[in-house]
Image 1: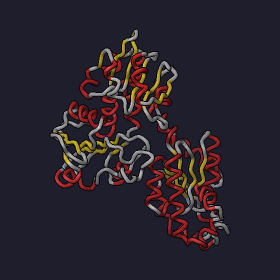
Image 2: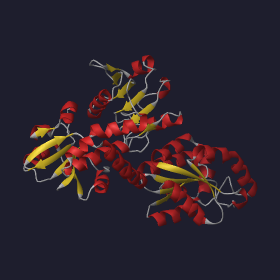
Image 3: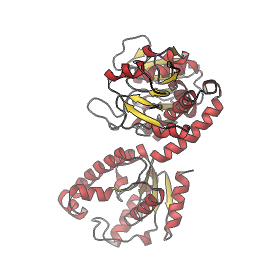
Image 4: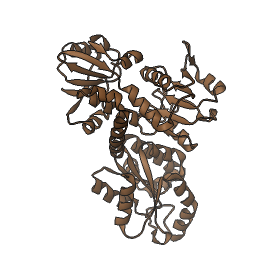
Amino acid sequence: MKYGLIGEHLAHSFSKEIHELCADYTYEICELAPEAVPGFMQNPTFTAINVTIPYKQTVMPYLYEIHEHAKAIGAVNSVVNRDGKLWGYNTDFYGLSALIRRVCGSLKGEKVLILGSGGTSHTARAVVKAEGAASVLTVVRNPSAEGQISYAEAEANHGDTDVIINCTPCGMYPYADGASHIKGTPIDILKFSRLSGVVDAVYNPLRTNLVQDALDHGIPAEGGLYMLVAQAVMASRIFLGRVEEAFSDETAMDEETDRVYRRILASKENIVLTGMPSSGKSTVGKALAQELGRPFVDTDAVILQRAGKPITEIFSELGEVGFRDLETQVVKDVANTHTGAVIATGGGAILRDENIRALRRTGRIYFLNRPLEYLIPTADRPIASTVEDIRRRFEERYDRYLATCDVEIKTDEVMKHTLNTIREDFFS
C-alpha cells in the first residue's frame, strides 16, 4: 500500500472515493487489529496514510515529527513517510473549521456547546477557540472536568447557546434512530431559543435526526460529509508534498472541497420518488436508475417479498395499520442500507413522519404530481381500486405530498421531461 487508510472497522468508509477524486493515486482501505499496528508503523512501506478510530493516538509514539495542530489536539490522522521518517499531521482541524464556516460563518463572540468528550471533541474545542468564540462548554453524560456540564444542565441553564457541535456517535449508522446504548438524537434543540447553527460530525447517514430537527425549525445545519471531504483535500496535498499550500491557501482548499463534495454527495444521496398510485414512480424510477447506472428499489416490491403475499392480502389480514407498520420497517431498512440508489415509495409512505425522516437522512425527495385524470385505479391497490377511491386519496394526501417533498415535479405523458427535470435538479 502506497496511499490509504488504517483503522479497525472500515467497511463503510468513503475515503477511497474521496481521495481518488482529490488526486491521481490509488487509495487503499486497510483494516488493522490493534496488535498489528506496532509492526505496521515500525516497518513502514507506505508513502502516506490516513489514520482513523481507534489509532489516532496509538500511532503518535512512532512519529519522527508531529505538526503543531496535531500536538494541540493530541491526535494524528495523517502520516507521511519521508525517507523512512514518519511525519504526523491532523487535517481534521481544517475539515471541521471548513464545515463550521459553511454552516455558521464566523463563531467570533458566539456561545458554543460541544457534545461529547472524545477525539473529535478535542478537535472541535481547538477550532472553536481559534475562531474566537466567547465561551465554549463540553456536554457529557458524567461531567468530571472543568468546562464540562451534563446534558440536563445544558438544556436547563444554557438556552442562550448560539451553536451546537455534535461530536458523539448519536444517530450514526446503523443506529440512526438509536439503540439500547445510543440515542437517536443527543439533545433537544428546542431548549435553545437562540440557535443559529447546528454542526454534526456524523457523516453516515448524511442527515442525522439532530440535523433534521434543526432544519425542520429553520436553523442552518449540516452533517459531517463536508468535513470528511475537506480534511481529505488537505491530506491529499500533504501526501503529495504540497504542505505549505495545504496550510496557507484556504481559498483554493475551499474551492477544491466544494468541487469534490458535490461529486461525493451526488454519488451517495438517494433519489426518492413519492406520489399517488399510478403516478409513474416505478416506471420513472427504473428508467432513471438505468440511465444513471444506479440501483433501483421499489418499497412495495420489498414489502411483497418480505410478506410473501400480495398487498391486498396483507390489508385483509392485518388492516391498514398493520400494513403501514410493515411499510415503515421496509422504508427504514431501505433508506438505512442504500446509498446512491433510486427509491420508489408506495403512495401512502408519506403519511408517517418517521418514514419521511428515514428517507431524508440519505435522500432527496421528488413528488411526482401527476394530474388526477391520469391516475388509473387497479384492483391490487386496496384503498385506491376505484376512480372515487383515487380521487379521495388524492384530496386527502395532496398537501402532505407537497409538505414532505424537496421538489415537486408536475408530470405528464412525456417521461423524458420528468427524467430530465430530476436529473438537472439533482446534479445542479
